[in-house]
Image (tube, rainbow over all chains, first blue to last red; front, side, top):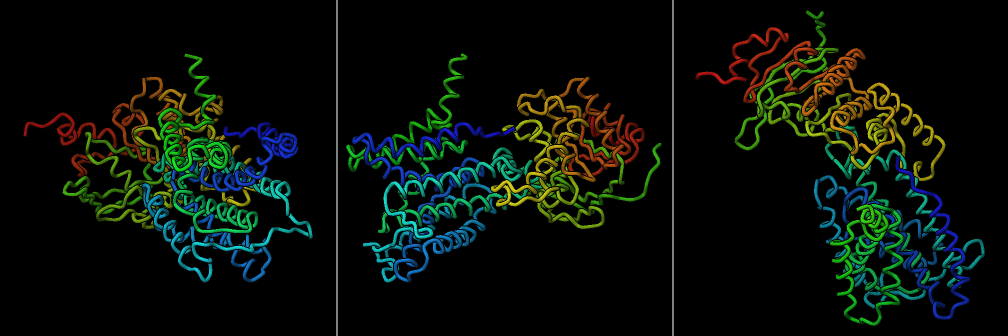
Length: 317
Length: 259
């Protein structure tokens, strides 16, 4: 029976809670809580993407676009029209869901990797819109003046406050997703992953479940985008380009796509690599990512999450 | 002789299946009586599995109709047909190898319970109750097929005989009225074959109609009420097992005629 163990989740939650205090005491990692805000935002996207790749067996190259849709809808509606940010976050998620249905339905009804192609094109189109529709999006310069988040008069105006807000969302989504995986729906998804033919014969509507998971991944990416916009108070299109979509795939591959923990580990590692540890490589950074992807695919097909298992197998031999 | 009931659960009319220029099935007509075991036999490439694929909706026939309980189903998708009450097993076992024995059967229960994505995510009490129902229902089936003791084992670790039995159990979990078994005894030793044949008879006792493709003639003659013989996509004989055994056309198709 698939049972995702609770203890590691509790330990991880405690680590996340105490981390800002530890970081405060060590000057060398003083900026890490700020990085952890970004890592948390990426975790929201990778959790959805991991469900899509690891469980529904589909690849999306358009997650950056859904991330951008959330960010721009929040930015435009709050900065230009002064609407309530939480309300706009909801609108962003709804729009992302509708767009995901429009992009996903035609391609997910077919067998094979049509979703990857459809989302690749979709991602590029959305990126062009962000750049060209300057009247709305501010064009390549982006948008400034996006307000911060506030709840019942409490302003999330420091890095630490925002850190807790983002990680609250990550845990809520993480637990929600784990519940889905352990349910009748998760069972159907795991069945589809092994044999579409047998799943169909058991009465599982394969394309419906794929669309469901794709829509869920788009909603999470949009939520992440809104949180990103309200954190930085500034956005521009380059954040939401194709390379970011690929970077998300690298996070999943590195962490391990058949385990929901892989999404978290991959997002954390790549965030720290790209913001902190790979500065040294400057414009060669892209090559490093390519190498990571290459090494992981060849030597670690189950990602870092699969390493303990591989070691166990190796020791047994 | 068995007492023949006249009610047909399945009616196949004028089925033609063409794969490019190859005719896999040619003007095939037959009925399946409710509550009986009908076997389809024939040499390799006779079109038996193709016929199963059409009945269970893996692909539609080039021409012709399939009626299940009086309703046309030939253009429905596989999952829709499963919901209407036709289930199947596969020639090459297609278990969900990433799951336990129990979970495999639980997937079979999938279409008989509705739960929503959101309710599952929040673990709402009603959803959790349904999950318990699915689990106990799946366990009942494991007891029926005799695999209850292995419920928590990985389905991949079972020997072939038990994998085939488990596949039948998974098909039963969809609560079918007609179950299509594609070579349930293939690759099994004598004890395993006997267990499979015994299980098929007990499924019939539950009132489920069985359509059976099988090469083991002992099994076919032992458990079937009616036998249909296909050769190169055409029906060459149909009738009670003893009639088929003595049919010269059938003997020719199997052993090869002079002409």
